[in-house]
Length: 454
Image 1 (cartoon, rainbow, N blue to C red):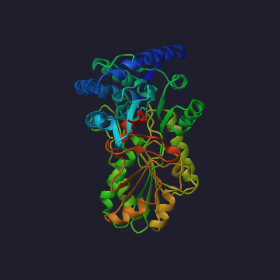
Image 2: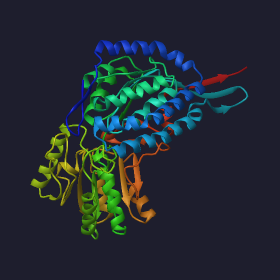
Image 3: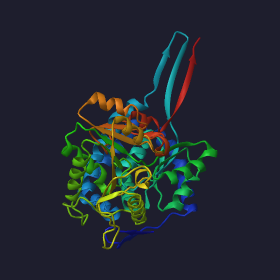
Image 4: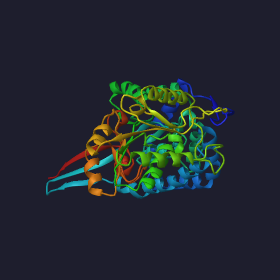
């Protein structure tokens, strides 16, 4: 498997892909090793994750360069992800004991009721490339702390990062058969799902998630799917226009828009639409596009070449149906996977741009008459990951957001994830959840105890 630099198309490494037989062998070893790991004390498992955190800090500069080289994220944003990872790990370290502790729910003279949280066993973690440290650690860290063994398949577009994670886990004291890295692309993921694992945790597209769900359905295993979004934001007429435009431009264009919770469609009250559009376009024009290894770069290349065609198709469809191209709109003529930061106005829901995930530096901005129209359009989607409202009026924001079908809602912010809050989706955005104490318990199977004494 060749690893290509999306900034220039150059080959930077080759990694041997795991065959179906090799994946089956890794599964057998993790299955045999898991009971001993579950039998170790929680304190011992916590200690390994603390050492893993130390390894990440020690190697941070090299890890950031590797991430930038293989998926194109600007180097400053790679450092941001690694810096913020520490806080996410700290959350799991601080809250695992409480989340995993046995619960006493009834205490009577002759009857006691208890709940214990037992590890699932062996879990398959098929992870994503856009935030490999965040997305992966949301699953494999609580899974390990809960006593599970993990078969971790990083995306082929972040394979070097995935192997670095495996190396750091072993350096931290996690046995190789408890955290086993599976290398490969779609065929490797398909072979992994076919193993007799106790849970499948996938992050990626709706289409792939649907195939995984179909493969798992006859076996009744624990399944969590963190899929995409078409995340809307409504800008009310009472906002500070410049501040809202700057915040939402960053929410739409950070990491070249390659985030499940990136802002993908914006609805603006008609009274401020034109001023907001001008401020938004001016902000995006100020973003520096260039060498992702340059600390000053904000916009880098796309990780996946096929996405360029998706963006071109969405732009062409929108313009053909009456949208106005305000900025960008085409590939950048240079080696690698480059696309201009693109903004369109006069858009509507007949256009693919406003209905299907873009996952790139592309945004449509639509004028709306009032709150009711904004709510109707925000809910006009098969997705339901995040949604936001910008207004200084908290009561108004709460009233609007209460009507939105979405796993996460934002008031005066966007493109934000907190380890303290559950991350979940509705509809084509997935099933199950990660993060928060609920995300730790998701890696377990609750056992109910009915204890009747004499």
